[in-house]
Image (tube, rainbow, N blue to C red; front, side):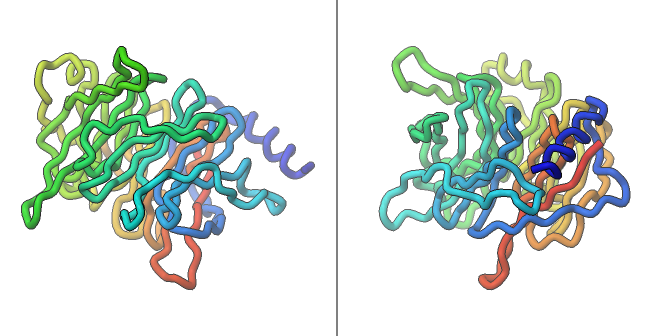
Length: 304
């Protein structure tokens, strides 16, 4: 406990701005059973939440990094039909403390679920279950963005980004497309009024004026290339505008405001979700194992 308090006190001495991983830093490895994908951090206490495709559930731990840190425990299980393929994508907190998580759906069961602080699970959006949902970005307690794509047979995927808002009727959700022309959009991040979208099939990160896209009468095309990157995945951003995402089969990169890439973690097995813990100045990356005899892990590194 003393070691934990000392570490927490040291973290409070950092400056408020976030940015790149400190040079020469080695990421800490935290083993994690299951098949993890997305990750999120609760600002209030630094608790870490991870989606597990194996169980179609969310696991969590109150803190990570100390020798006496508690193991991951089940936080919520997302219901699915018998025989239905399981798979959860991005996970994010709303300002009201609720947790939102996307279900990929494999073309038949795409959805967004809402988990209350009590652990109660409810469907947040069932507007189009054919959409394979990946990226999730919460704008406020009643509005969020979803990246998705559809694929028919051997045809190339077609995707976009939609805004989902609460309707006037109880539990009603309204989905409206705001960005189109994408292939396989995965990660979403917003800095100021700019929306960043990673398109895994196009090997690009696009940027879009979010306010203009929401105000347009039809979906705006994703045409402004922010960066070219090999197979980007889920994304996270710091308040100063630094982006983080997968940038090859085994690495994670940071991207400056000008789109310049810097490798911050390498030698990973299969990086997936990323999360920035602003209050505690750390980057958390899901490293998914493909071998049955080797556990997956979270990689944790301080950022400055």
